Image (cartoon, rainbow, N blue to C red; front, side, top):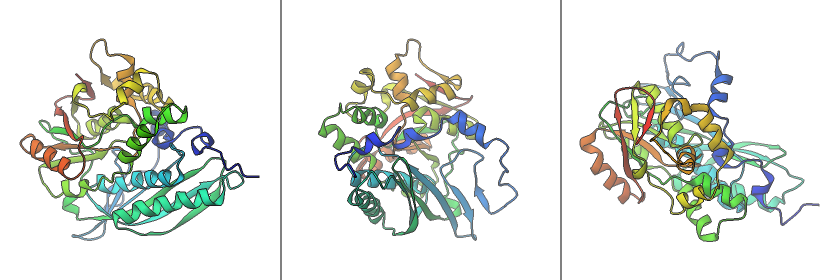
Length: 347
């Protein structure tokens, strides 16, 4: 018999982008994989841990391809579908592109979940794709032990507007478009310790499409873009630093947060992914003396459908923050700079 009262978040050992393999594990698994440089049309492969693959078709068109899926971080099936869909589509925006279609990826314990719950997950994904102006044109499904949902997404970009995570320049200002703390909220949800207002706040952030990325790419003053997901602000900041051959300096006090992020981090609502992230890349991060454990956890906190991290010429930064906020991202803020050196320094 199917248990109609079962909570989605209790069917999964992890949730959202907290399910991602730790950066060090991923690097180890990918070691020795053939590089894509033998294909000159492949503008972006896995060389710099960028957000999506990009294949140039002609002088005017490049195709962006990505896939993302995970286990539930909320119990509302429709919201789960929307969050997973927004998270997958974000990779297209992070490359400066615009999505054109999606394919659904579905794995469900069909003997434990009612068909209506699974339908609501699919409907949630369809609804966020409709907001992005794209169809869910097909997909693939399997019977799995834990519920899994996501999308493969295809987008287009003019080659001149492609934005990698590896093109930040010394002197650039760093902008983050959404608040941190999603992993702390999801940890509290899993433990039944977050009220409905907190759940609604997290869902609102994680279902806010990063469509501003395509607008950012129209401006030559914007040099690099990536989205902040499972490796946290430090992990994805490190990807920018390594790819760009530079050092990112992040001001902790300037980082935008969801309203209860600090409170939940201090109360110990921390995902296992946060600890795995620090173990994987902490040797390349310099924290301020006396940095409390809760702040380190926040800096490593896995974001699901997080904001865009943008490297922009300093003279354009304030105008872009205003424009991003006006476009519907009220927490957008300048969080640091790009400097000579390597790694990430938090001040």
